Length: 215
Image (cartoon, rainbow, N blue to C red; front, side):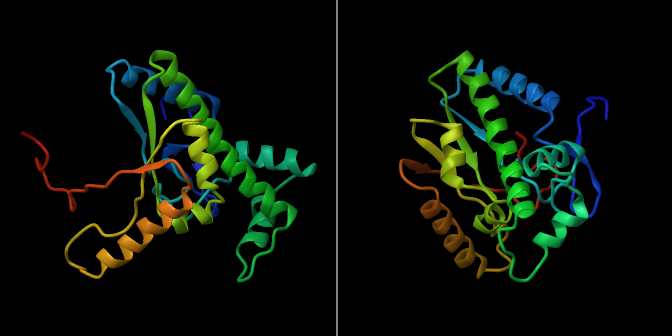
């Protein structure tokens, strides 16, 4: 709250208590400062975490339907956009590419690519040799948010090796079949990512316990 960012708003109208909207200029400036600070350490690769997404941020729904998003969607449509009218076009069994649906997906994707542009520029202003990597949220999550994964990777690392960590899925050994679904999802994501991609593994310690990762 003290940072004053526009919070992400889900499709039910709930504000996220801890996640800002990626369209917020103040949040972009803050992100740039953080990545520039980390770049000064001199890493070979800096990763954009899979929490850079619209779903799973402490609310039951997905976003974003904040005032910043609604304003840009309205500009694209040339008429006022409302959350209820957009939902009427999205939450149907067989959706079609109506103007409102396309405008909302386009604005969601633009918000991500513009944030990635901001991060890349901040990092390379410190050290142009640092690569950027993307941690993903699973191919279904990317599709639901209207992401074009190769284009997103291009925004992150134009003309460079595109580091890519296919995520989502199997966290514990309690459900062995999860290995199969996780492997299939990871393979789908690598295929969808396009060419010139270097995939990295996800290593997760879960469930989290006190002092698990401490010395």
